[in-house]
Image (cartoon, rainbow, N blue to C red; front, side, top):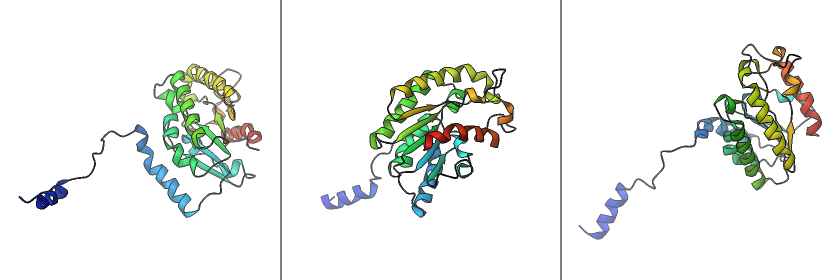
Amino acid sequence: MKPAYAAFLGLLCWAGPAVSDEKSPSARWEKDIAAFERQEKEAPPAKGGVIFVGSSSIRLWKLDRSFPELKNVLNRGFGGSQLADATYFAPRLLYKQQPRIVVLYAGDNDLAAGKSPEQVAADFKEFVAVVRKELPETRILYISVKPSPARAALLDRARKTNALLAEQCGKEKGVEFVDVFNPMLGPDGQPKPELFRDDRLHMNDKGYELWAGILRPRLK
């Protein structure tokens, strides 16, 4: 067989570089992130805005109702996600957009999935590091893990998680801890049921009204 012909056959048989079958667990949210990117391609957002990132508590939030005074706000919540997912997609959700403020809610699903408070704190530290890599001046507001009737068994772990994150935020310039946990508790120390939907996990309008009132002064 002539060398040139052998090389030609080799090209026909080559399937390209090897691709690992291993995917990040975060890859399951690819469709959600790709949808955000399509929206931004059609209507590019102005830089210097406020971006809300996180799980379903963010995704379900009607931000235009809660913050009508803010003109450049993006909701980038993808339901069921954890802190590691927000970190994984942060470059695509935040770098090009260059927000002045990132509001993050995640950690709730992490605890429900069995992660320890220490692991949640470590994952948040990684999120901050990834954001800071390209956006050193962007403020990060972390909304504490909320208490919910459906996850009452996790209240103690949520308290410990929030304590670790509050301490961590206090050591980071431009990173703030926003406590919604305590304001959502009743006199009995349990989550106020009137703040939640029928599923006892996701918030209703009253719940979001409470969150907005706590957060609004920090967005100025």
